[in-house]
Image (cartoon, rainbow, N blue to C red; front, side, top):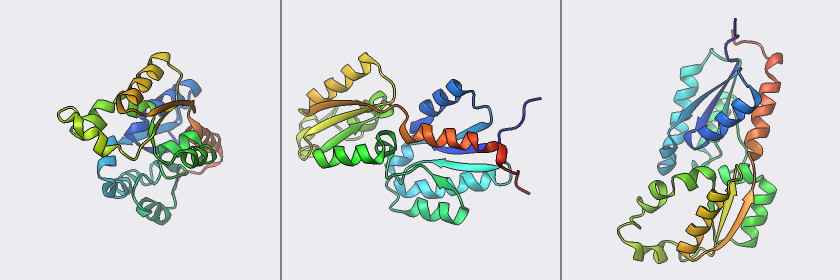
Length: 207
C-alpha cells in the first residue's frame, strides 16, 4: 500500500511544469504539489493571502509544508505570513533569482540594469502575459514607451531546446534588445525540493 504524501509544496502556477518534471525524473511520490494561479503575479498583494488560505486548508495533513514562491512583489508580506506559520519558501525576490542563483543574478543585474528576463514559462506565454495585457498587439507603437529603459533580454532556460532559444532571440530582435541565453536548469528550485524529500524520513506527522 502506497504511503500518503508527507510533504506539501504550495507553488506558483508558473512553476507547475518544472516541478512536475522534477517529480517524474526523481520519482518523488511523497511530494504533493498544490499550484496557485500564475495570474496572481498581476496582483501581488493577493499572493500572501492566497498562500495563507492554502496553508490553512492543508493544516494537519502533512508532515511538512514548503512554499515555492520568491517574494514575487509582495514587499515582504509573504515572508510575514510564512514566519507566522513557521514555513519556509524559496530564496530570493523572484523566479529569475532562484533559477539563476542569487550570485549569478546579481552579476547579470550589475552588468546591465536594463535587462528584461524570460524563463521557460514566460517564453511559452509571452503573448498572453506580456503582449496582450500591455496592448502591444493593438498598439505596437507603445513598445518604445514601455521598454525605453531596457537594453537587453536574458533568457534563463530550465531546459535546452534550440527552438525555444530561437523564439527568445526573435523576441529580443522584435524589441531591439541585445540577446543572451543562460541555461540555469532548475536552480534553487531543484536543490530545495530534493532537500525536502531527503528530510521526509526524519519527520513526524503532526498531532
